[in-house]
Length: 155
Image (cartoon, rainbow, N blue to C red):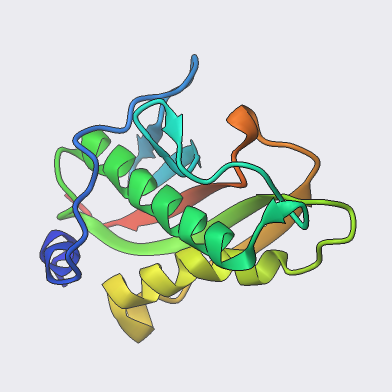
């Protein structure tokens, strides 16, 4: 499985870079695991999907936000590794949803990222553990933020 080739087949272009938005490291690699810091659905400095679920942001918009944040997370991983050739599997996805107190479809929001993981890695390697939670607010008023833990091939 070549993740970069699969991205091209799906007509997905990763951002040229995914720098940190504050004082942290976008990706940390230790041995054969990579932790990707929280990623927003942003392009450069602009958040593409902002606001609160249950108050002006639709489920479909938030799912697209989760998809964009995942693409940005992959760009951060690529920036750290030099390429995505070592990616073996995304083992954990955590999704934070900026939601009103009565919104309960957090898992459906996370499906926006999970569906892309399965599309890119297939039904076997696409298997991942997942947590989705509602929060009172997120940086830059983003509707969603996600982070990843990624298994890497041995060098």
